[in-house]
Amino acid sequence: MRKFGILAIAGGVILATPALAEVELSFYLGSQSLPHSNFTGDIAGVPLDRTMKLEGRSFEAPPYYGARAVYWRDSGWGYGVELTHAKGYASDADRAALNVDRFEFSDGHNIITANIHRRWEDQWWNGRLTPFVTAGVGVAVPHVDILPTGGTHTFGYQLTGPAVRLGAGVSMDLTDRIAAFGEYQFTYSDNTVDLDGGGTIKAALKTNALNFGLSYKF
Image (tube, rainbow, N blue to C red; front, side, top):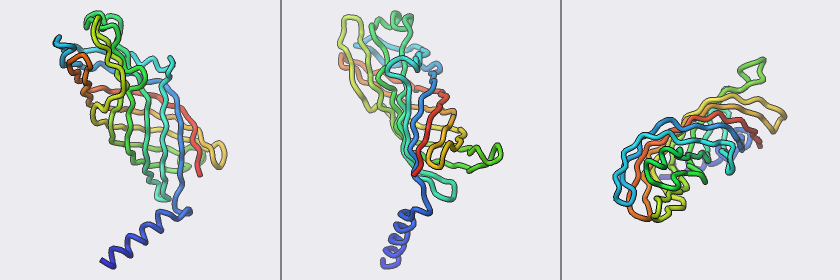
């Protein structure tokens, strides 16, 4: 037991040593889309089985955005958390076919993940660019906004299921503390939505996004 205690203390000292670590906070905007997904279940007792392509509308309020925090080690590996505020709107044709006035995740198809990162510092363009990759697992917490015509409005955040994230990009230092970056990100979530007026909707939602942002390192 004493040996494990010493190892734990040593590990804590290593994690707390500034020379061995860097914290990076990042914020990004971008453009995201949602490929076709199959929606199943029922809306107030009416069966649902329809393939739909939700609209991202990245630049309409509230806009698509994301933020993350990464704890980098000198080894080039990093660990952190990330929130992506994606969006999805059913088209007019799909809403008419489903007999609903609203069918959207407009206050966010929010993806929250714990991430692992890998970067290769100053590898490209005479040492100015740093490529990196990201992978994460977590949960989907969309803001559900579904209103059947003449029915009960489902409006609020729900924990709808597990989610995963994959990404790759490149960053460039602007100063010792600030960097700009661009990246591609893919997310996948397996969602089960409960409707207040009765019914359940299930769908696996995927997003593709091009992100551009700034990072602050300390």
